[in-house]
Length: 125
Image 1 (cartoon, rainbow, N blue to C red):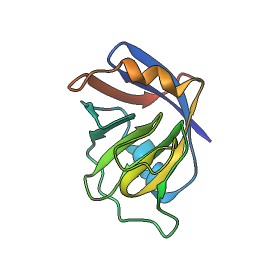
Image 2: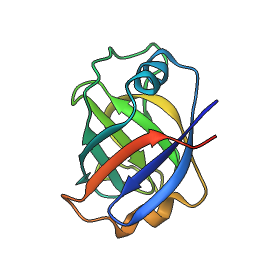
Image 3: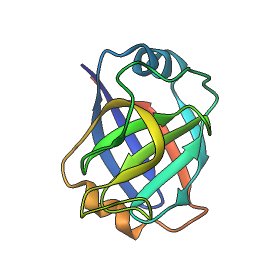
């Protein structure tokens, strides 16, 4: 798995990308920067990647999972319930390509404010 560092506002956490086509595409384009949009306990940020919905895309995700939202061309960090949730788990607005997960406590992202800078970069080896 490829390891990345995600920084949003003053929070910076490690994450692991899986080997999906979208995750590989993102890895090849790093580093990237964007702006946080907070939607419940999800942060998403538009990124310069265009990918189609993968066959295993899903709306129901787990705390700490990362996704790519094809409709909005956005990188998503899930750390709790969203307005679309039907229980305590995060639920995306529509299916996302699951990219990997945060290493550590994803709920730290609760402190990130709408409009905060977001950076994605390869983790040092």
